[in-house]
Structure formats: structure tokens, C-alpha cells
Length: 93
Image 1 (spheres, one colour):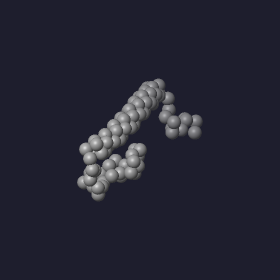
Image 2 (cartoon, rainbow, N blue to C red):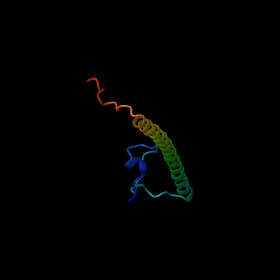
Image 3 (cartoon, rainbow, N blue to C red):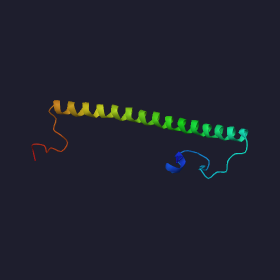
Image 4 (spheres, rainbow, N blue to C red):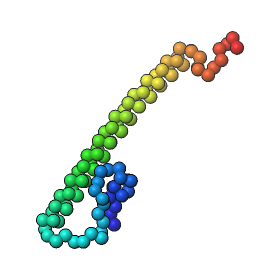
């Protein structure tokens, strides 16, 4: 039995109510084709939403990696300069 993403993902994607194996059989070829086209359209929409989410996540990962590199360089520069670390007490204490 296949589960649709809207059932598994808690309604993350905008689907109509899920259809399951208990549906009555469609009466004509035109109705079957329409049903298949509807399902294909929703799958295309879901794929686009997932693709957009993936692009956004990758952009965020790229920004975070750039920030991490800047912080690592600052830390390296700080330790190279001999500056005391933030948690060290100055010598006059």
C-alpha cells in the first residue's frame, strides 16, 4: 500500500484529501485519464515545492559555511596576534 505525502508529512504539501484503495472503480476511460492527469499535476506541484525547499536549504547551508569560515579566520587571527582569549583574566587580577 502506498501512502501519499500529505498523509505521512502531516499536510506539508497542498493536496486534496488523499485517495486510497477503497475508491469505487472509475466508469470510463475519460474519467480514468482525468484522474491520472490530476494525480500527475499534484505530483508535479509537490516536486516543485520540494525542489524549492532544497534550493532554499542549500542557500542557507552556503551562508552558514561562509560565516563559519569568517569566524574560524577571526579565531585564528586572534590566536596568532597573541591576544588573550575572551575567558582569560588580564594579568593585573
